[in-house]
Image 1 (cartoon, rainbow, N blue to C red):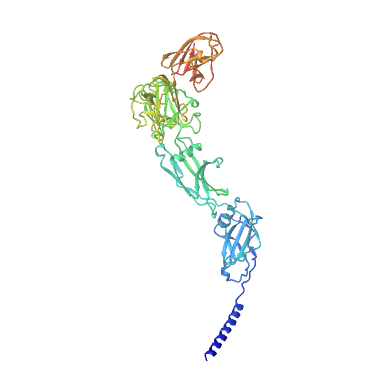
Image 2 (image 1 turned 90 degrees about the horizontal axis):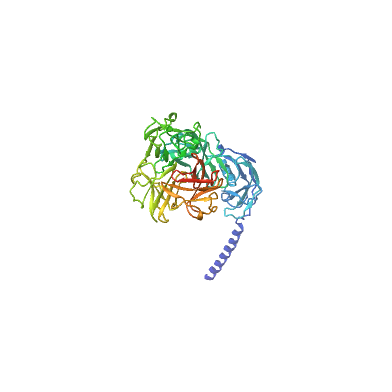
Length: 588
């Protein structure tokens, strides 16, 4: 019985083996499939921004007939510029469906990423790569060509204010906020935005650019910025005009578009001011008007140092050193025409501001509060305060020989420190109190209290003796100073009888008479040349001809480089008077 069961078990096992072999043969066979045939519903597409969100190009393709559930089939739609063999293609992937729709935004983003220009038609190639879901058995379809034109899709710009009155007193306040929508909708990477502005009606022929950055859609602007925009667009301080703004959007490939234009009416305040008038060095000629210094401590405040006379009909202030009737000119005068302190007005140019007495003045104009101040005496002229006389102001005053240019010859010891100081005390807390000046590490002169900047005392490092100190704000944009020895002044040239030509060491020395005056009596050779040298070798400080004639036989001096002085037309003995405080030379 046991033996029979054993044979029966062997027979059953044999039947199972044969049955298993039969089931393997009945399993389905997975074939390789085949390439699909691709078609598009259009051959040409010219879209607009209105097509951004809707389908405007559709693709479909045949069944690749893989032996797998069709929901697992994978398809890659490749897109590239025509005839580039898909080496720089972009892709769209779908699984389980045999069609794909592209919106206007999709197509525009693709073309812009290729670096194509808006409004130009381009041929694109499309094909489908099909495969099993695990990427096996990949096949390429036929190539379909479609001509597509990228459309303009600019930002929409808005501003929270369309009329702004700028004032020095409120220059840090928010003036407006610019907001704009995204440009190049569908573009796959960052877009760079720039806020541009230009004068109204100029059509952005020469726009000014304000960099914004990538994918930023808002920009605040304070009054000071809008004031600068207005001035840059020719809206003279104190007048009103329109400035236009737009957004420039740029892709990394260089495609560019521009938003709508918004306009802001801006009333500006001046950032420059000029002194004119019969009581001033300029007379009534705007072209000769001298510039005020901007006081960086007080918004809208300007000041200048000048010699004024009580005659001549007074002074006024101008926004431009151009003709009185220039359309953008602004004329500031006094409400009632008199007083060392007064109220400014631009109505009909105001009254002339009367100068009470002759003297060197500091003239301060506060446009933020429509005030002016005429100050002379203790406050009104720059002096020197320092170790040579003590640090309690006021110190010896400098002579003012031109607007914002002053000079003093002062005895100093080696390493004496000092400051240029205007005032009776160390108090610069208000705009009509003292002012003093420091030197920066870079050697520049700077008004003490200038926001964000600091300086140190000036220091004389030469030999003990007379020192020439010049305070020079003649160019208010580039102020400077001169600090050189003033122990001697030599007459050099080829027009001095019995003296070697142009030989400083053997040239005669002038005599110092005090108060900046030097004299010499010598024989001059006719129709030759001379100059004045404050040393016995070339390279020393020198004076040359400024080219401005004064009274008879008197010429103005220049130390920044000029022509030599001509000797008289007749050889003879002459007395030469050099006046550094008046900056003149007289030959008689």
